[in-house]
Length: 350
Image 1 (cartoon, rainbow, N blue to C red):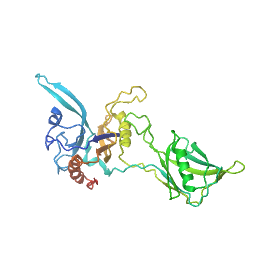
Image 2: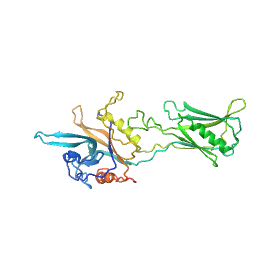
Image 3: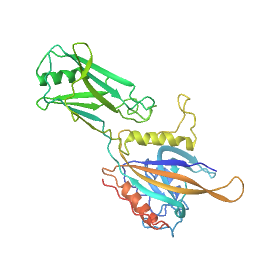
């Protein structure tokens, strides 16, 4: 049988082009780039623009179409040339009777892990060595094996001066994976994980998106040189996060890369990697519509048609001025309401 395949279509924060109207055929959409780069449109079984309010009775199958940034010129047999025709991407056919789920994944902002250390009541001892040891747990192959240790010999008994010195010691390390902040008068040292540049810089990053996860320990060296804890109470350290969120551009990029194998590029070790232009936009944020459905295909055993599970992901930029997401939902919601499973309409807070 055919294994599960996934496809992703990625839209931009734009409004629907004036020529993308109900009933317009794919020839009209493509010609002279009528469909814009990053424009998402629902088409009927004849690949004509589905009217808002259309149901499964009007078309038992739909396609999601996305305009890309690539264009081409075309000359037909009669010698007529059309220029700047837009290349488009189609989803697999979405047959109403075979739709399993229709769900929304709203954008959720990511947040780095923090550790707030309450050192109220601590009395630093001049000449004593204090140690901040951070154990990182985000290296999945060996969690807890990578550490960074910061040592500071106190020159003061004043807590605010001591806290500021510890923060400065950590921040002076160019290879640190956390930033330290000490707020005078609050007796609180805040450690905030830094963004991992290897996976959060560009579309060409090799590493997949991940976030720093850590645990922190505070010690001092006693008269015998042994480490002792100077954490005051069990609730001295308060951790939050990390929150990976949903629809951040790094996550959409990774999803797009994983799905490239379904459309041709399989060799991920050949450099430069030969692959289509990435459609994810750096620093954009995305709402996602997830459609899980089955697709019919002719079985290789020549015994008729069988079904294979497919996931179609529609990632649309969280709108600031464009109306594309609203236009898309006007087409999809009514049609999905009319399918045998009568899915509820999707909405997104903007």
